[in-house]
Structures are given as structure tokens and as C-alpha cells.
Image 1 (cartoon, rainbow, N blue to C red):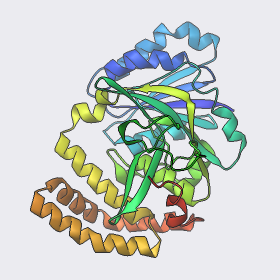
Image 2: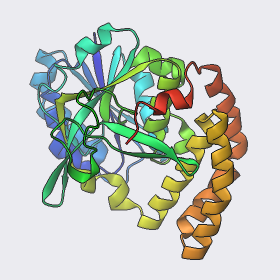
Image 3: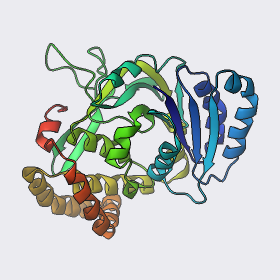
Length: 331
């Protein structure tokens, strides 16, 4: 199967200089597409420079490297969607600029796609956080007080750091994941297109990959986590935390957490729970001064007409209920 790599970029000049050559050294890749989201730094020149420096490798291995530029800043979902649309591969690897893959990281994931029901496979992310290396890449979650609460799942029976859950049974399937990261995963393009790709309503960032993964699960497709496929993820150096204020990031995270419910949840008991607890969360935020939640809620309300139009399209693809999905990912 032909594999394309799509790298969304916004002001990632320094990260591209470090990580893009490592991506070009990886096996099984046919093309690398960097989609620049109207950066104000020298990101585009850095990609062009990398192309010149790696000219022999690109020519000898018939590897294509190209850059696409947005005229204006669109956000993560729209930028990734554009890259996937331009990609020629049957399989699409999505990598953030702050992700550096190991050279043979794709060798253990390709065979999963022999199963036509497999939509995506997530990589093991070695995340440097302070002096620790936290293993991420597998997602779990639960429905609580009207919202989906997602968290990091344990990646093996020996992984209990940073809140990863200790297996509750003797046999634990660590390949199951609630979502595949849009910055460290591989996706089947045909299913991506049938699902409509990432939802631009989540722009500029957060929750868009959880949303797409959840829609895939509800449509009856499979998601897999592969611990032998390893990438290094330097999250603290990425564009979001280095460019946006903590308050803005928190506001968008709240807004998109709300949008996820309005777009995807259909089970009656969950919807009632959301309607009951939403006023509770609003009043609690007023009392404790959590203005980011209040701002996020009002931002969600402003685009609610678009949300419910998109919701109708999502429902048409549903094959599995919310309860059936989430019972497999309890933390």
C-alpha cells in the first residue's frame, strides 16, 4: 500500500529543521506533504531547504516532498483535511511538527490494514514532560456528569504512570483505543473520505481527532493502538502552547468538549444527563470564576445552527450506540 505523510505546520520552522529530515529517513513512505497554515516565520523556506539537502535521497528512493500553503490561517482540522485531499497514498500518516518518528515505525502497522474494517492505527508516543517520559497514544474514557471525559490509557500491563489505569482483569487488550491521535497516527484514506474527514467546526485545535475516531467507531470501523510503532512527541515545543494564551486554549478546549456532545451523542440517557448537568456546570463556573467554561459555552451556542446540521449527517452513518462503544473504554 502506498503511504503518504501529512504534516500540518504553523510557525514550526525550528521543529521542521529538526524533525523533517528524520521523517524523510523513515521506511515505507512514498511522499511527504507539509501543509503550512499561513505561518509568519520561515517555515516554507525551511521545507524548501530540506528538499535541497535531501535531494539525492528523494530522487533515489522516489520519495516526493512538497509543501502546500494556506493563504490565511485556517486551523488544524482544515489544514489536515487539505493535506489528506492532496495525498496520493491509500494510507495517510499524520504527524505534528513536534513529533519525531523512529526510522522503522511503520513496519508493525501496515499489516493491520489487510482488514478492511480497520480505519486507523495509533502510535506509541514517548512524551517528554519535565524529567519524565510519559507513554501516550492509547485513549480511554467515560461519560460523566454530561460529558465525555477522556484520558490516557495504559499502554501495557506494566504501564501505570501518569494516571494510566492498572488492568482490572488478567487479560487486557491494549490494542483497543477510543481514538487515534491526529498528530501521531495512520489512517485509511478511503474511510477518512467516507466519514468526511476532520470537522472544521473544531478549528483552531483540539478534539477533532477524538471526534473523527468516535464517528468511525459508531460507523462500525476499528481503531487500533500499536505499542511497537514508536514516535517521540515534544508537546511542550508545539505551536499551540508556544503561541496561544492558557485562557484561550482552555476556552477552546471547553467549547469543543461541548461541541463533541452536540455533534455525536445520541443515546437518550446520555443526552438527558448532558441537559441536566449543563446548567450545573454553568452555575458552578460562575461561583468559582471559571470564565473559560462560560466563554466556551457561549462560543458553542453561537455556532449551534451549524453543529446540528452536521449532527444530522453524522447520525446517518451510525451503526453502534454510545453505550456499546464506551463500555469498552472505561477507566
